Figure (cartoon, rainbow, N blue to C red):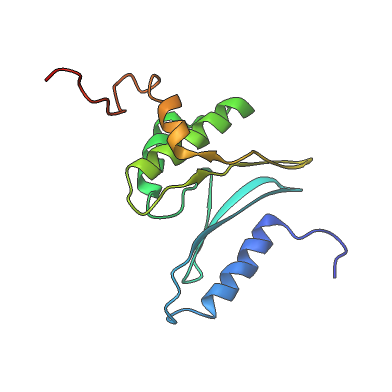
Length: 147
């Protein structure tokens, strides 16, 4: 009606209102609404009871506590795109390896004022070995040749 794109805040509010209408019906939904609008970048966590929170950093799902451990330790306000991509992948990879309900591919989307870039999915097993040296410990099991 205003002939302009909806803001991220308004989109998250609309989604939260829809979820609120279905509260107490057995839904189990954790989601985030992310975007870039005239106000700048925005991330909203939206829960199945209609709750929504505006956050600087967000992680959703059963492995989210593990991801938050990485994000809380390494997130900085001023990061390059490459640093942010690497941090996001690292958080996803560690959350999947510390949570039996998570796993599969690491999917990352970079949102800017010019649009979005979807990076090709990477199997978290591949990321596991790529980050092994960075963690400065032997996280990959290698059977001993000694008998």
